[in-house]
Length: 182
Image 1 (cartoon, one colour):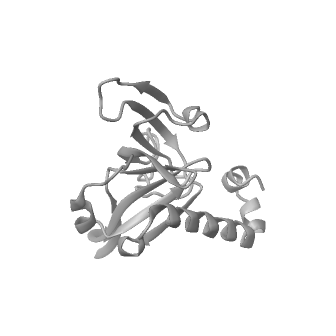
Image 2: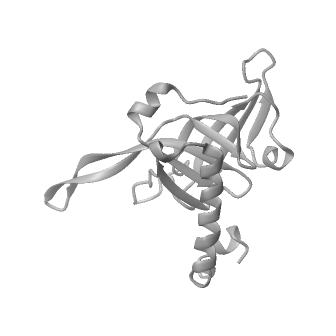
């Protein structure tokens, strides 16, 4: 089964963000735009990443489901004096839905907030993931991705190298210590 993104995304979005969540990865088309922001008394143009709401849900290096309705950031920000971080980054919670032709593997099924089957749908297996946190994220140019599976393998290799190189510093951060079992 091929899970595809509309062709219009390739023209609009020129990058792909791949995030590793441990047992699975997601790939989301993105682009960077410049927005005007008031910083102290000056108006500055600041880069801001924008994400497609659709993408790929990847397990064992293969896209196994279509990702939809991507939401970035914490569910409740009312009590926080800070603006929520609106980018896919390590430890920043994301929520999304996935649709697939087959049920998710048991290891992933347990991580979903809700899973159900809608018998007459094109993709009858539906799962919702809420407030999951990526442990490693990298951005790749769209044009350099010939094969998504190969790129995910490269991401996991880069992640292993990053963890090995920075093991001592990562041990000091509870999130990384838990995620990478340091």
